Length: 301
Image (cartoon, rainbow, N blue to C red; front, side):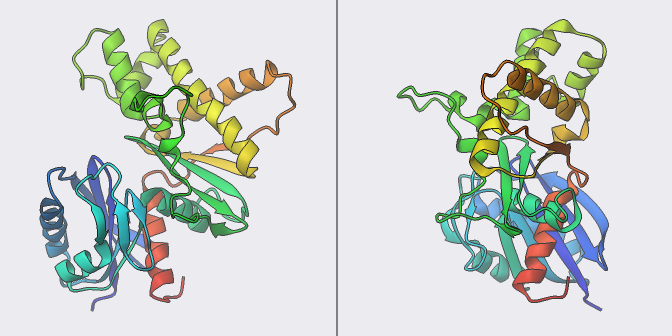
């Protein structure tokens, strides 16, 4: 009997997937995200779907970029630059022959946290997802905030300078990226690019490597600075930090420490941000995609 939802979390590096049935995820897996063309992406998704073709009754998708979740139209696909000005619900429904829902990945994370995670019962909250960029979502007055142009929560585009330059290094998406952290550590260690992973960074920190500690503190201070800005603008009750690198508690601990330093040396009595590590981890986007599917197709939660 077809009674399961096939869920795709399409990221810049990997496509995570799972079957969702009766409030739990069954089989899970991931494959590398094709970066060359939309056709390659469809092929990869159809290969996954073929494994569950006799079980799934619908497809729930989390994807980067600016998405109209009601119409399916995407302005762009974020790091997936082959997605631009196209109706992706139509593309996916033609590919799978099943009902499809789609939503921005950061917004899915916020929906997931509000439904089953750290923002349950919270009227105003912010989710920051640290990955190949800095995504996220905003819950305002108990609802997902999308914004007039559907781009609310695109924290990657926050500028950190006022120079007339298109240098992406001044964007929070670059400065807050876990990739930037690992590349910086590799460069300082005079190691080949790609040789340092997030796990290795934390291992070096645990070993007391002072050079890595300095890089990591500066990285967390950049994020803490923007949390102060977002607290001033949005006044949320809670921030939830997610993304792969957040699985290690040291990230949130250090961001909190850097926040306290900034508060301590400020002449202004800021509202202190309440920060928490995501309880859902990599399941936040998947759960948010399921929530969006059920809401879109009027299925009981």
